[in-house]
Length: 78
Image (tube, rainbow, N blue to C red):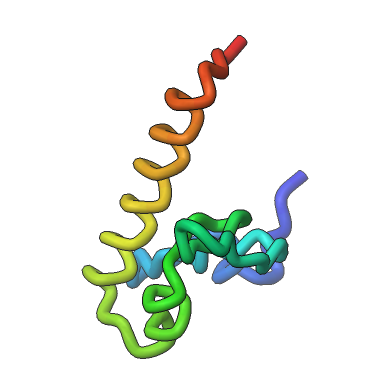
């Protein structure tokens, strides 16, 4: 059963990308990236002032980084 009392909870008219933060918030000393969301320190710091297109680019970059990390580790998806 869906919640119809708050229609905004299921829609996003601006297609606003959610922050990729997963609450881990630990920066790898070598890569200078958060090990949770895979954003750089610069991306994390600028998130609030980024345009929608910039945020979408960062989200896409995080996905690519995750895919690359999985490939490099030899992990396979079941």
